[in-house]
Length: 416
Image 1 (tube, rainbow, N blue to C red):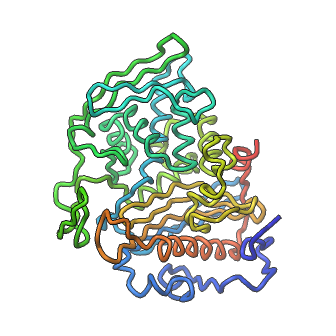
Image 2: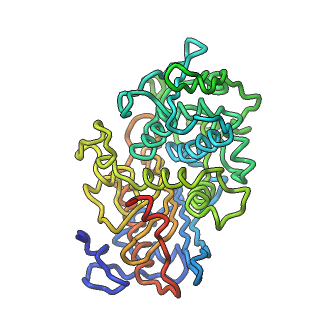
Image 3: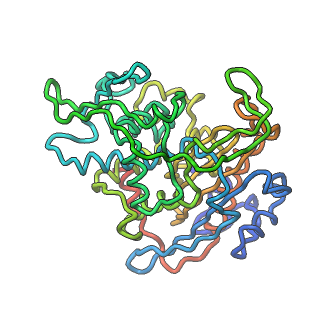
């Protein structure tokens, strides 16, 4: 059953009067300015909101080969935004890649992974009550990342991959405006983030692989200060100074978009940009990336009030929609922190043959103070990303295609 007027359009026909005039002429600027009821607040001062958008149309030929046409708005790798949880996506893919490249008999993403501690500031992870076995694994950490954006799960993958390997692997794949060099949610200095925990993979009493703690030989911090805002709260005290983000992760919007594209369309991007995943890995990621917390079978995610279907679906559903129509699936990874809100997605409508890529970042911190937990996510950022996703979806519903896309690769991952 289709539950939304703007979703319930069959074969592009306008079955109700709620669809907005798309105003689409190939210009993102014109689109945003033509829909004042949706975008007027942000478009009054897009510089203030540090707005960046990438919209990619996908056209298929008779053999279902994809052609990509991108439209951008204010995309600039030198305009910093804090990527927050978006960095978890490449970490998840590189963790799977590392398992494959180790090529150890019996070692899979579901093998028990025990994280030790080589220093008093490191924390071990020897159990995971949320998993069906009660034990941690790469696969279950990735599920937690994709379903609810779990921070500890990312930290464990970061420790398995290693700071240097993570960054150099992404650089080799062409993601030049990405630097992921610190854990999330836990306070660690540069020395500590360069050092990762020992990790052991076991099958019962048998050790399949033991990895000592790793030390990065490189500094990935920015050479110059990245100063934003007017003040920050540090240890409960307000400091009247800009916050310096030079020691924080970097994941430019184009790189986020391109990682999603390489994940969803590995056969249509340059070989060096792809991740070394098996067909089963792809299906695993697609399934969990597009799934909803309540459908995961993980007991702690069953609370629909805390974890609605739209919990990590910022584009089109604003992070809070209680349900999402069955024909719509969003393969994405969002992030939010310090007033920055970002999402990168591949969105499909199986019923109407719609598919597109969309990535966007917006900054809502009116008082220009960091760490005070006063950000306009609910008032401005989430509604903007929701409406942006819907506006692009409406364009896609109305857009003529010479060939209807065969989306069975993704449908089978979700509904095997």
